Image 1 (spheres, rainbow, N blue to C red):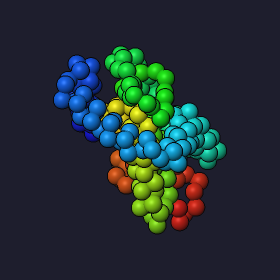
Image 2 (cartoon, helix red, strand yellow):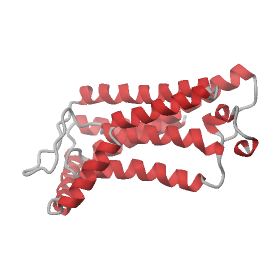
Image 3 (cartoon, helix red, strand yellow):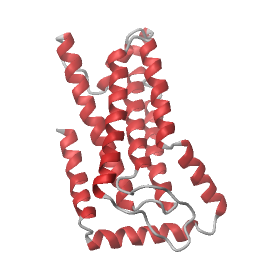
Image 4 (spheres, one colour):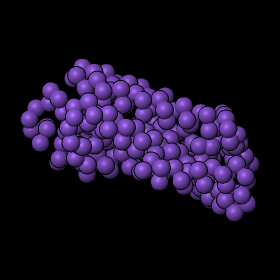
Length: 228
């Protein structure tokens, strides 16, 4: 249900983009020009955003997710490792297919500060940042209480800043980035629900507590203080 509710605005946004809805295009163009004019004369800012985009590139985030999968396998949380793999794979494939289906071109600025290949909708950087942030957040939240606010802050910051950098660099429209965020949240919600249902049926146990989410299995083999 959560995934469905999140996908409703994404579907609406995709229809408006595919139909070249004029008000949305004007909004996208206005935001793109505003952000571009704000960073065009600041090479240090542009360089920082390019570095951020490289660090949180979709492939870099997939490598980080692979490291997480290996770590989970070593601790016996194999189903949780499968969930991480499935979430990243499903989100990545959906992103590529939607880019091809919608076929939206990237912003064409007069004097661009950065360039990117391929179609624009949805933003791959925004999508994979949301996927990776959601995956790491749900895996590590149950392992600590003290650092939960920090985990949330880091996950939100990585997702939001990555998307803003892509907009400010002029390689994505605002609606591309928002769509990437929405789709990422929807995929994490859907695969999380599927994992928890599968896990509960296998163990014939009551549903996991909301604050434990999909990561209950990840507590296997952890110290008692980490499980509390």
